[in-house]
Image (cartoon, rainbow, N blue to C red; front, side):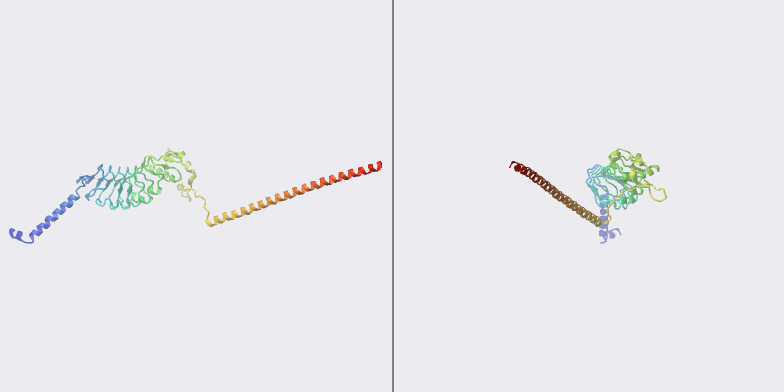
Length: 340
């Protein structure tokens, strides 16, 4: 029976197919075993690629990877779905690279991500969609970057955060609506940012008081601007210094004062403003012309009166001279008669 089975024409192709499938499975398994630039531990499902001079995310990562360490490399950017091969990753460390840009969909598919570090990079901004699908994130480190702010819409993805690192960035303010979503936050780092302690920062001051009262931990918020508040701790700045922008909330609820900078008065209608300027100009022009005419008339009148006074004086002098001549003639006539 054994030889009959082997001599069966179907047996050889069947064996060949089984061998081929096994070979393909073996190759596929090896291709996902471990990238040559990294070291992998199949038991702990940890992939360590630290300090390997990498410029890109390594390929052929095993889909069961749960921890990926990529710090101390030369990665410059994260493209769309950069980690699609490892959908189960829980810890992702990209600190101390040269990352300047992150695609809004770079983390798409990482629904179980718990810890993310992008510290010590060159990030200037983050897209509000970056953490959109992630709801399990508990640790986010964005310190030592060049971030100007965080989009308020990112708050929904940060609801479960227990730690947020924002130290050593370029933050001048922080949206209070973003902070109020962080109801599970235990620690927060904000030091070494150029905080501008004006009306826009009173929201952060109010939130910090509530956060610390509930047992939260924060390092420090030192003012950099304006000059008169430089190096002052925001937590210790008295509310009196914010009196210019403090307004009492309406109603009888005893609400907290909000910071609303005064709006400058603007014309209701630009056309009306232009018309007002034109009318004012015309009126001023007419007044100036009237004053000029009055000045010319006054000068002309003064000149005529001066000429009249000169002629009058001249006539008086001529009349006086004629009177003197007649008097001399009258004196000479009796004298001549007497001599005769």
